[in-house]
Image 1 (cartoon, rainbow, N blue to C red):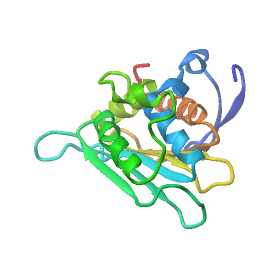
Image 2 (tube, rainbow, N blue to C red; image 1 turned 60 degrees about the horizontal axis):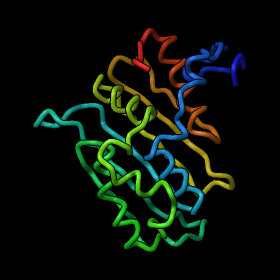
Image 3 (cartoon, one colour; image 1 turned 90 degrees about the horizontal axis):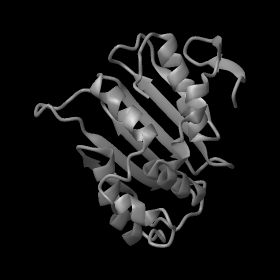
Image 4 (tube, helix red, strand yellow; image 1 turned 180 degrees about the vertical axis):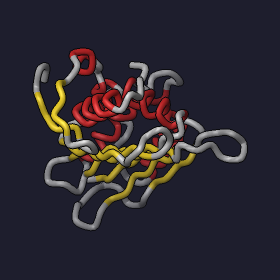
Length: 190
């Protein structure tokens, strides 16, 4: 990936990928691994935060998992959780996903998500930081596509325009987002 050029969506400019962005390991983020696993099992999984605190000055994260009409999956019913952190959403969703018919207990990553500090890796922490800046964030792992794909949307707060990043790998979406945000002089602390 290093040295590769590509358009930064939202601005249409060609930019160079920073070497520090390629060193970030988004693929080890427990929540993103779960979302990919769900997509590989035909589930559409989303994680979002409105970017504006509620009346109690808390951000609300929403995690959803649903099976689409065009894909056969073991998921018998949709699951949705809303909590103060992305990690809490996922920890509450895990037993619900199992009750809904998914074999959650088997994968090696499942036990990591139950630990308090292991669910939120670099990717989710970046999304959390953006939400704290007033940016609304939306991440989707789409199991209805032929090959699971990702969509990352950020808007509001200090951003002049909505930005959307699509790709086959979550790391690429995050890398392109970080490049674009830095190009707009938003210094994301990673």
